[in-house]
Amino acid sequence: MFSHCDRPIGVFDSGVGGISVLAELLRVLPRERYIYFADTANAPYGSKDAAEVQALAMQAADYLLDHGVKCLVVACNTATSAAVAKMRDTLDVPIIGMEPAVKPAVEMHRPGVVLVMATPLTLKEEKFRTLASRFSESAEIVSVPCPGLVELIESGYIEGDEILSYLRDRLGPLLKKPVAAVVLGCTHYVFIRREVSHLIGDDVPVVDGNAGTARQVKAVLQREGLLRSGDLMPFDNPTELQNRVTIFASANADKTIPLCKQYLARELGLGA
Ligand code: DGL
Image (tube, rainbow, N blue to C red; front, side):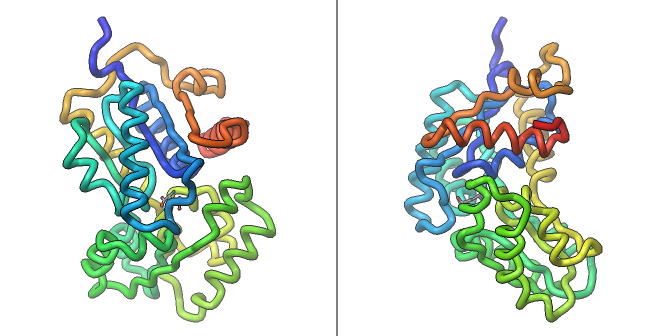
């Protein structure tokens, strides 16, 4: 019999960024099915205002709920800051959001500044300001808004000269002081982790919130009795992965969906 637990998990982002979260979800919850929605018609979210992103996130949530998902993962720091409270107030499924991984970065207790790379909107919102002020006594936290970086990653640039030159311009002037850690506060940036390390130095930790979010999704599903207990085998190849994950995009589906699949296989080390 088909039970609530057999329904898929809904995951969304403005574009391909949330695929980095989906990769972590597949590691932590390999027996679940997933529906991923990339809102490419409206990307990037990070340069819009909060009210607009809130409306777009509600629309994305409705799209996934129409596909029968059992919970929603807001795989986007920007949409979480602007919309998660409203979503929790109005929608009747568990909702798991994200926040820049400032806590783990500060708790490494390394000397130097903590650089938080994120979209302009995430860094402007109350949610981030409250988070940063919680840790401001323990570390110097420096906001690094990165307008235009999401667009590069959406265009398929995740390594090479374009990304390195962007990062050099953006981070170069901040490297005069020692860096304790870099926080990737946007799910898109996880794909360029290696390039960030290349520039900052391999000894500086580069942290993101994906593993914490995936653990949180598992805990919430467990608590709500919604974990899938079926007989799906953990995937170990790209074909099985395709049976497990369905991807939709609100624009440019012919380019976005293959790019999502390519980034997902890369993150999972499956080759593309
Ligand atoms: N991936 C998103 C995040 O985590 C936002 C990207 C955008 O600006 O659309 O913030």
